[in-house]
Image (spheres, rainbow, N blue to C red):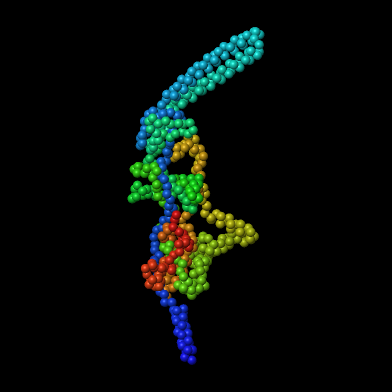
Length: 501
């Protein structure tokens, strides 16, 4: 009996301990991190890297082989178009001219002899003292020597041209930014033209060749403002304008990029060819708008912290589950002329008024198909024109473009970007007096990576939203870093968009 009493006591103690362990009340408390909705400016940029180059840069080569006899220009030399900048040893080229001259004289002598022969043969042939065969042979010899004389003259002209090519002239006016050869060096132009100099036309006007990722190229438009910095002048910020978006793709490690040309004014000559530029292109901006931190949009709280009763109540009234209920009745979120579900009350009223006016104009007698066709025509006129490709008018013959190219073809540019004020859905969380979280649906616009514009919401500047929270249990653990169960997930924020690339 005593043994069974002891066993029963042990079972009771174990049951009480298990109940206390598994069914005790969780008294974990959370310290919430809050932030206020503010009012300010949002600017959206596309970032990239590029290389600074001269607008026009020419590599001066040679068409003949030989030894460099003289150099008349060095690094940083200012040259004018047509100025002599190098001289190749003309000894062999002069001898080639003499050989061609001798060959021409020999061909001319043979031609004169053939001419005398054909004249004599023709005279005898006219008197029936020479056969037709001999006359034809003399005429053929004359024509062959005539062709040989023309070939000899062409060889002499070619030798003179090669001799002229031994003197190198500057093709454009500018500055020598690179010299590839020295006096006494032999250059061979048998297979490819060797480069002697690199001349930049005007270093006061430079361009940045920026590499833009294919995911961002749709936001770039000709005429957009761009700013960039270079490592040589970290405290200076340079400005430029997008002038060209080249259509040729550049694949780097399986990533497709496009080259964007940015024109830059370099009057102070700080920028030099080859510098690396860290570029930011302004693609969208909004001033004095309501904005919220991106951390609030990325928040994903656990279910035990959400006020489920309040969420159900809001869903029943058409508020918490989405903006559809608030937009459908023309409430605070309604926008005139919006998409379906945006400003539904005003849109339906406008459609009804348009329908009634069309029916009244036709005496109230119209088939349903005809009525729909008339309404479709009205909506087509009201719809804003879509941006189309910009095609510049063809340049007149002889007209120089900014790249020094005579073009008679129009220039194609991609469609104009419409990045600014793109609408999307998002959600933030507010804290109630009972320390519970309630969702608030918002309509987001531009995002600069830190803040996102709020376009439609019941929230206003100064209202507090939740960014995250720290549990008391995690705070007591210490030493291992504080665990934040409400930390924003690293995924793309709902509706707000991530930071610009």
